[in-house]
Length: 320
Image (cartoon, rainbow, N blue to C red; front, side, top):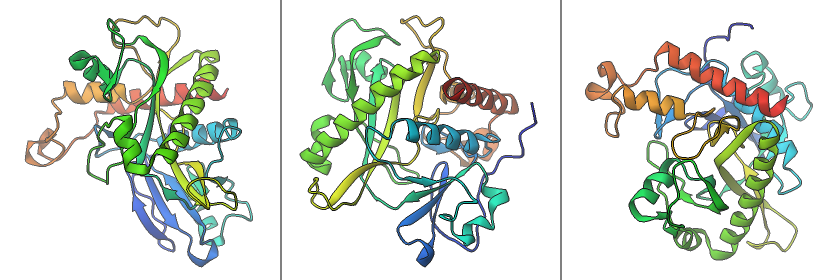
């Protein structure tokens, strides 16, 4: 297997306008060449607990892009999405982008510009993560009353839609109840998103099982684009945006050996989160003099390799 190149932490496209730099993606405007399009560039940055770590995972952005493209195509019959092209030789890609092909190959997507709905659309099919933490305290998940006697890792009777706020860079997402979410974006739009998210999750989870993986939970993001139809909100169409069903936004477990009653081995960021906690990380120690080595948090090289291997294996299992 070829050795991955050095991680791409920051894209460098000086002829394009950088609109935003997220935890993973750099988003560029294409100006007058394509005013209704954006360029998404998946870096090799990685975050945990809403904190961007100082070093990255080589080729991670390419793996995320490969898997997102796979899922965008596979689930397009459920709801439209923002994907336009990932072929840097395509005539749809402006010349100002093609000149950076060496940097962008495999990690860039041309997408439709959309009005982002300020909600993280999380669907959970299993008791894990923050859902398990809340359930232990109150027998609820995002304020939703759950059956008594569930254990960590257990499959829920039915998948549930559990929204959270979409925080600004550097802030933390906050779990909210369905009622709070509906108040935030409006009941009609909330119902559309909830229905679409549950359908996307169940379809993807059924497929993942045929590939030996359990999709325990995932996060979707949605946007609104102009529409000639009478959909709600008036004149706007709901579409799927951002990334889709990658190990960055989803919790994947191996089906073989699955046994509820505790934490499960995973192909997602849980491996990195566990290492961070063991290394002494806690909220408030993101960086600065109290951070690891007094200079923020740097991932150990063996954890970098282990994380990359887990991401790569998940992509191969799902797309082979």
